[in-house]
Image 1 (cartoon, rainbow, N blue to C red):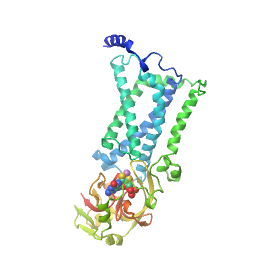
Image 2 (image 1 turned 180 degrees about the vertical axis):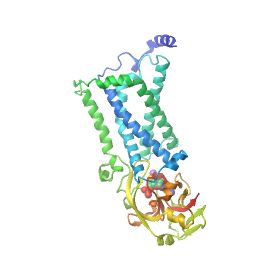
Image 3 (image 1 turned 30 degrees about the vertical axis):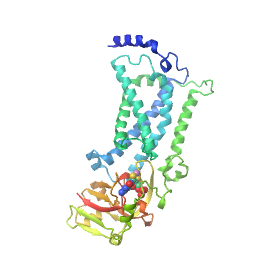
Image 4 (image 1 turned 135 degrees about the vertical axis):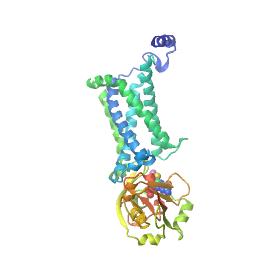
Length: 391
Ligand SMILES: Nc1nc2c(c(=O)[nH]1)N[C@H]1C(S)=C(S)[C@@H](COP(=O)(O)O)O[C@H]1N2
Ligand SMILES: [Mo]
């Protein structure tokens, strides 16, 4: 096979133009020693991003064993994993661009395919480069709430993750030996015509990455919220000090403010119950400091007061070792319902909250009642709750 391929490339050689032309890339920075060092940083960032992304996907969308198992403690686990997901995803953008530039000539290497193994290696590279660019692009658009893509984000971003990560594993397998050798060789401190050394180049790239992190980390780490100039949402900005992702629509507003509002607890219970808002307020209240963590990046801790879901279903005669679905007054949209696994149902910190930071919930935070549970993705902290169903 490879002999026939050789013949093909010899025949095509006169067509080598542009980036395929011999000597098309002259910069001394197209250096395997730089590529290997960038590769280490990129590999680490991609791996953290991939693993935390799997956790987030699993907690929201299964597989069933995973979402059943997903624990309610530690309270801020999801805040940490999702913060890492978004931050490593953003931090790897400068690393990725630098790496692509450094290895650019290799993307146009000649011959493009030398045989079966080399073909597989090149396919891995297509998956790695294409997959990572896709992930970074869709991720950034999602973080900035610009749903410009014509496909649903979660399944596409999930599929892209496997392609990118699979490509990375193949790439590491193929380049391991070369990279090890390159890492042992020191970087020359000589500067090029522009006055930049290879070490200087890496410092600039690392500095860019660090700047991106510094300008966004405040969306999860509140003391730095003021400098989070690249973050669209952050602690302290929004009613009651908490950002909002999705405001109440007209119908929700009417139903939520109406005196005919009722909270129902039914399903597999011995005594289905109905509460008015005053009934709910008259029940024993619990206060918990819990984070709200949007999958799109921001998170903030807040003080929530309300009734533990466990207490509500026990009043209706159900055991806390059950699964409960939570429904919103909102009629349409992706977040109108969510399911609590038994770990969340039995946790006394899982609340139907009536207050946020000492005040009745703002309508956009889910007035009159919303779900807030420990270690849970924001998309599942259902607002404007009117019904709990025990399964
Ligand atoms: N009914 C309903 N609940 C919802 C949403 C929604 O659009 N509708 N958005 C979810 C998302 S994506 C997040 S991040 C949190 C945000 O809560 P907040 O707007 O009170 O900060 O609410 C969740 N609960
Ligand atoms: Mo969210």
